[in-house]
Length: 310
Image (cartoon, rainbow, N blue to C red; front, side, top):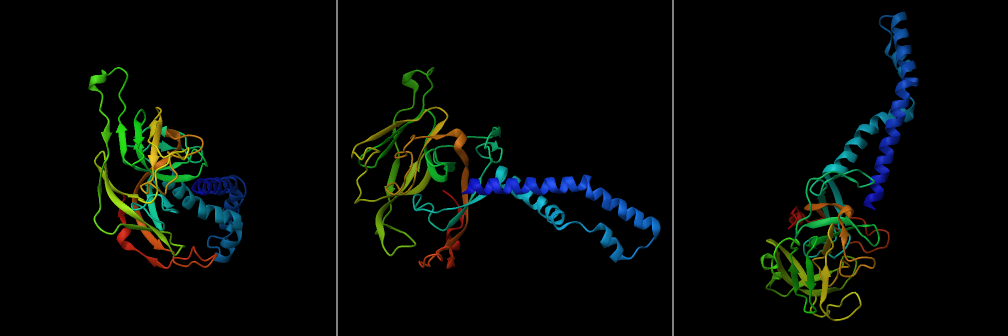
């Protein structure tokens, strides 16, 4: 949906700009000449007469008004920051339904609008980043956490333990390559985390953990009543060798996330599908109305959720 908004904004910007430009070289010149002729006839013409000869067609007036605004928005959301809304529970407890986030568009390189072709290399995702990308399956914008970098081997066991074997270049002796590391997670004390759909009356009680992924500490959820099953629905360990130029991603809500473990076409996000780095929550709106067609109406604001995304 965000990609569609981007296309609409760019089209509107170009249409308004072209209308303004064409008018400047055609009817706009005639209006300027008419104003000059009016002043030649009378040094101090009445305001009504000036407005009469200089009046622009309504489509030109709107184009001149909206083009600078549209240009600013397109530049802002294409190269700097773009707002997104979290629609699902796959990133709980880090992000939840109703969170509105800002995505840094230049951390992963400056890209052209619509085509997403990278024009300036700035940086690449790091392990632990929360990234927005176009899904290899659907083309829709997804948000997940980067787990595996290009060349890494990611292992997710049937006991829901996460291991990573970092990439080692072929020219480095095997004895000097990084060893397999277990990603540490510590259970959060308390009754657990209730994963509740805002539009439903029931939820799932999860075990909550703090995971340390290369120094990035963040919350994750495991549902103790759900077995980990791989893409073939088998209760066994899963291992993924990340190709170069691609990334392996997972939701923080590990048992309620369709991510790299389960996609139909591939397990990996191509580098060119990256949209940006999710950096902060700028507002959280509660949507408590369950009546059909009214679920989009906010019923409250939670300022406690505003802040940096871990």
